[in-house]
Length: 255
Ligand code: MF3
Ligand code: CO
Image 1 (cartoon, rainbow, N blue to C red):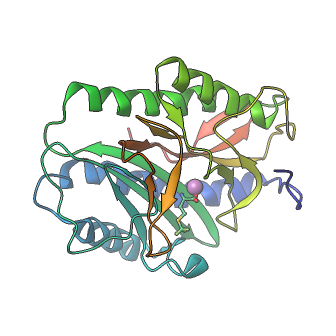
Image 2: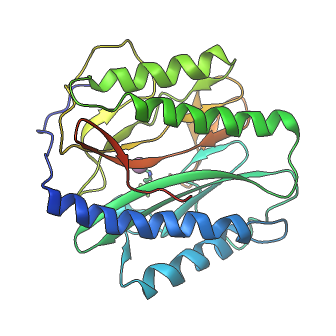
């Protein structure tokens, strides 16, 4: 889809502000490595993030965004994205859980997601997580000056499909800055060498969602939770990256 608005080029100072917001996101995603275990609820995960966000003097970029009711998204197994945290959603050994967090600090946003194994998952599930994370890094490698947006898309899609999985079409990555969703859209599929040319100062949230089965998704009656149509497992990894000195710098790093 062609964007209607211009892509906002950020100054060094603006990128520094996005970096601060992104560091908070990365810190929470790292913290969750030790929090996520069988028996906790997705509401507990939200609570951990909420404490950090408050302590840092930041706010959630998701809460009230188009009416979204929570500070993060927590999507279990066949849920693709936008799962709403709930006390009733208890994690079980062998599940996977995708956590997506956006934080606003000083007017600028960082956005990232990670899919975690709960307890011990089977080897086949682990492979889905590894391939999805690696697909994100394949996309990030292509986020460099003078490439075009769909070079990112194409490298993600080919990496994923060569390994027998599908990439979700219904949701895409995006520019990020003062707003959570800015131009350009960054699909996770498509032919190379299409769309806007990438420039220094662009900040992108790249976020492949990968299904074990087919790519189709359905949104549940809560108006948010997207699940795979065939009920297959789905994983999601996302980083906010800034194009600087010709190549992508990952701002939401958690290692
Ligand atoms: N990371 C997702 C995105 O960039 C999360 C949006 S959830 C919402 O689209 F609640 F804020 F919509
Ligand atoms: Co995003």
